[in-house]
Length: 100
Image 1 (cartoon, rainbow, N blue to C red):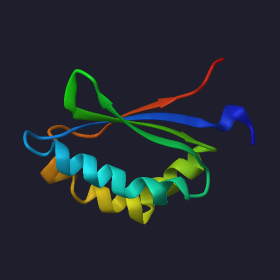
Image 2 (cartoon, rainbow, N blue to C red; image 1 turned 90 degrees about the vertical axis):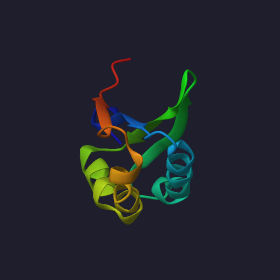
Image 3 (tube, rainbow, N blue to C red; image 1 turned 60 degrees about the vertical axis):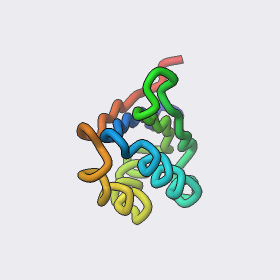
């Protein structure tokens, strides 16, 4: 695996008022399946310590192709189908390349 091809991603999901518990549950439900996807190196859920309605997924993928496949895989697509009801704002993605 070429470390320069590894894609690091920070996904921020902000729940609508009253929906943080459901968003949290749905995020946790997909983690085991996503971690089994080809090319998944890390898929870890965090919550903002100052705002319990903000969830951060810190991810690492072997390549952009593996990340693209994740976006089209059943676990993420299932979660995505609930975004309109659960999210207060669009999913925010930061694609990163590790420097050191």
